[in-house]
Image (cartoon, rainbow, N blue to C red; front, top):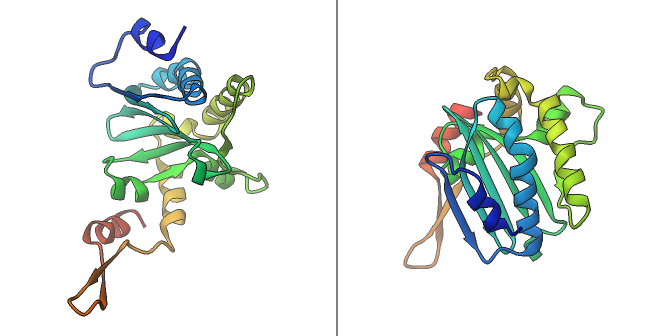
Length: 197
């Protein structure tokens, strides 16, 4: 059964968007496995699928519950080597600047809870390793992000604040007529830094 057959068989939740542009076999298998393994877990906590995007080198699946979201993204883009995937937790909007400052990856929660762990992004799995890897990520999701799943954001806020503490707002470089650049801070990222930093 292909990825699109899988999408046809399940009932599409209200407000969910599905986007696919010639997905590669590895991204198709990854997305199908995430939907089969992780989707039922987060849905038990009241999250619903918001969007599924599967492309040749990328997969992005987003679940939402009120202001909270969970984003699972994987990349096999040649310049992103070593290939990886992440489970990301956030609150608020999903525009690129806000999402960058209002979210944390599961590996950061793992490191916060148990600093002895060598927490990092998940290695992007291929072939027979996909189900094992995604099942392991699902177990870690329940173990380390249970508070977030249940709506308790205290640890999320602490971890996000620590992550953003030393981050600088985005810079905008604008050349004048002489080719000299002036540097300004991007206003939205300044506001987000104050809010989430």
